[in-house]
Image (tube, rainbow over the protein chains, first blue to last red):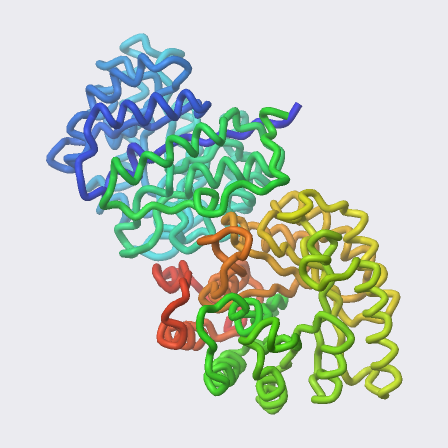
Length: 310
Length: 310
């Protein structure tokens, strides 16, 4: 039996965050349904931020609550704070992905508070989950943005990444997610930091979130696999850009990441042909967005065997 | 002191092979001069094939003999057979890169002979080098194309790759080059095959030649580094396509590969800023070609430190 490794689709959240047009709510749900049917287990379907901050997520409530009914799908939502968590609890969302930057400057720019204030908020979220009797029902992940460097402050101390991971774990997080938000990571750094985080929070699962801004996204996935990571955030058709580097790529591409993992013998549970059929629809849905995709252009190798079908 | 790892520029050969326009001889040489000045040690400047086969290389003699005079540059040329080698010997070319496919079907399609016939030709080349008193003067590399699979025949036996590497080494090759000609390789396969080749031919240097056809080019570089490889073929601005997958990428991109290696702490000897200044000129020189480049689009991270300057 092949070892398992998974992608978590973040195109509907990270990918759409910078999109020029509002993607119709029904299309968002159609995308989620088709990708769940192709075998993607978790999709981050929206973000619980105020609509005046990101209008794309003004339909967050409808998207999240409808996505909850999609068979076999773990529909998760990003939350920046306690308020977002409360929305998620109210709607009965099965998984909430909290995020705090390892870079002080980035956290201030992103959520207008210090990282310590964000972590105190995380504690309040965990308290409220308990008070609502949702322990063991609503999963909560702790994400660490700018773990490999920051466009504002530059270098980010690795001890800070470990300290935040440790704080999340102690507070009772169900998963730790380590993110290269701005595409600064290199494979040596990924191996070192992710191996340290995996050790720090074991046996909690650790996910990695890479951007392909500087072309190293999939190389960093391989490095993270070496460090024991088996869950990767990615965006279908590489949807999304980088606010700090105009014209540059956003998240790593879902279909290319599935191809990488399956070609290396990992069972992703994903039907790559079905995923590629869904991917073909994105240019019509998002005509203004720059989409990427090596497999979409080149096709699969003659020698390719899907590990999960083997 | 940082460990060394190098790129060999193949844009003037592999990159230009499919180019729509003939690139002026003087521009080819200007490119080679500027890239040598930026610190790239070896450039494969041309291919000794008959002009009726690839018109782009009708100026091979001029390019090769002039490039020999560029200070600090190891100017090499591809040779498909004894005749190409003889041209190289006559011109005094310092290094000749012979190539034979591991796939029988691909070798037949490429040079219209069996792989055993190609290897017999390699022996004749080595004999002629000796007869001309060029041992220790003209270096000869043995390249193995389609080492990770073939668009024509599909799977390629790994034993065949090892057998060809071994035959080259026994015949007196100065370097072995293992190529993923069609972009089929994945990082697990790269680690396994390259580690086996490195063991088989030690202490001969082993180079890797990856195409980015399916987006795994730089991930495969990282895997090859794990296997002990320290020399990588690449093409400036990712020049070149794939004859088997229209629209797909060609060789891995030189400036992105240098960025990868330097960010991982390897000293490439290359001044990345100078390389990027040269890269800026390619769109004018080759207006019809599709060029790539993550660093060209996104810029270097604020945290980037050149290992060779550190």
